[in-house]
Length: 178
Image (cartoon, rainbow, N blue to C red; front, side):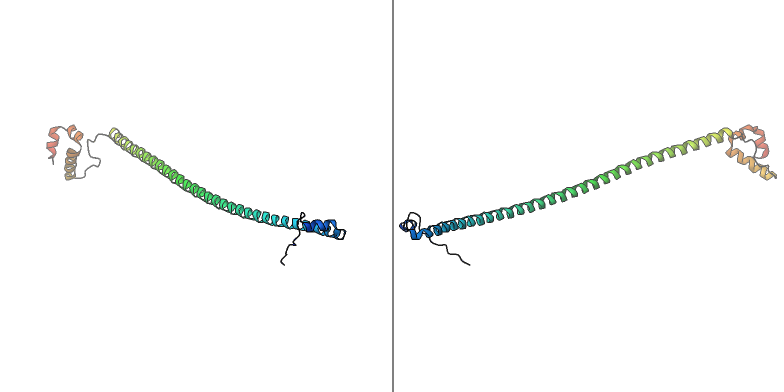
């Protein structure tokens, strides 16, 4: 409902002074005081409504600022988490590379050591074969026929120089040679 404020005469007006001085109007002073109190309360109500509207506007502005701040912080958090994940991945890749390089170095070193050991093993075998083998003066298998004996002598002459040197020259020629 619309409220039309009651128009009162200002206290300095002749009408107000006549009303206050007249005994008939002593009840009118009480009404005037009540009317003034009502006007003062209406003004206070308007001021409170305006103050409430300002506070509501401030609350909305603060809420919007808070939402922007939260949104910005969430974005920063997502960036930080993404960067952390990137750095972990990069570290893992570097760690894998370092491990792979170390493994390759170790394998290469072990292969070199194995190759060296195999060479040394072959050299030792050759030394053992040379040092431990008897001089061959005659074939290991006794020939059964004269043709076999001539073939064995011919083999010795070509392959085993020490055995040929051990025979006197007339013995090689007597057997007929190769």
